[in-house]
Length: 359
Image (cartoon, rainbow, N blue to C red; front, side, top):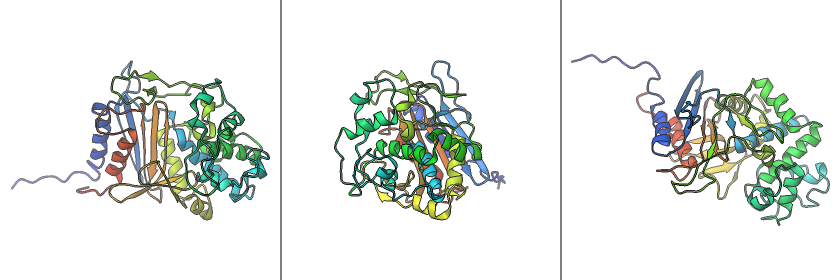
């Protein structure tokens, strides 16, 4: 009989995740992918592919990227902090804070945060968006309100970036200063999120170390041309999806949020009270800027995803914030095995949160 030494604790713990990363590049055709895992006091970082396809530079922990709709989680957190301070209420009508914006439509602040307002999603009107190089929140709102509501307030669910433009405008009115300052003062600085910020209109660059962002403009054929979308005017997304961050910062933020360090218990409870979704992420329900996703194996994780041209991100974790995964791809297509990067993310979450054997 030959003695075999037991592997050290945690050895091979992330091998399934590593295989997902490798497949995303070698078979999925993505330029690059990175993932950071926090599990209690342990952390793991993995990457495959390139941050820059011209030079072959690998992706790194320090890389900053556009996080898309994960911005909504930051905005909703600020709203709930203001509510805890008594400076606004989730049942406040939008009309109270933005007189004349919607008229007497019966839309509350809470309906904005959980996408039950019925307000048209302005990013569905690309022709109107492309008529000008930059946008103010007011101009984004005008695009949305040129279309009729998709349902009466509270009568359904539909993902609408317009909701968070309005929420950002209300934050600025209630706080008396800019949304970017509120996010920085209330979340980024206290948590030490050095790579996290909401860029101002007219600033197309990503400050600090970053990956290039590549897009096929949502064309699905493998031979579609690839465009560099690293730099673009961020005002079109603003509160709905304009933020920049890192994997480590997103894990730190989500861990603090789910761990109850950013909101009082009743505020966090309200944030995590979900409604059913429609035509969105498979297995998802939506709270206030946060979603729950039931994985194919039955496990449920909490967090948010974000997708912009050339940068797709998932940041999800266990309900208590003790086990967290953030993954980003610097491309918005896949060539084999997955319909889009969401399939990559689901496989990675299953690898981390599904049943483990021998570890």
